[in-house]
Image (cartoon, rainbow, N blue to C red; front, side, top):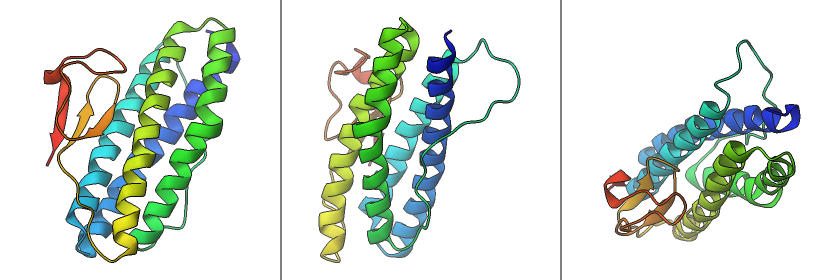
Length: 182
């Protein structure tokens, strides 16, 4: 694997791993503030970030040893309003800067596996941002988000509200490959 794409995978693994853990902590805070649907959303998206990290990590199976991951991470957790703001900022960074750049480099370097995992994550992060924005609108009004079941594809992390599709729009996994967070 070419060095630049390899480093991007390492960085993406680091960023997705941090998002996974950060969202679990944000879910605990939402529970404390009596926003159970927002907590459920954070847990569902945390799982999607776990899937993204795993997909990136799998592409790095040729490596052995320790490597530095340079990843954007939101720090300064607070109440649920602030945590949703931090989550939206992080998702926006991935959508506007990180994954578009990583995808272009992987495409240029003809690294198909990396391009696939970056594309799956990119497509999903757009959904995460929309869901977090919906939740923030409610929390800004001091009420819990009105959310149906949250579905997460266990293959690519694709996330949506409502019923699982027959076929994942990103990776073509079947309906049985979705995990429901109710």
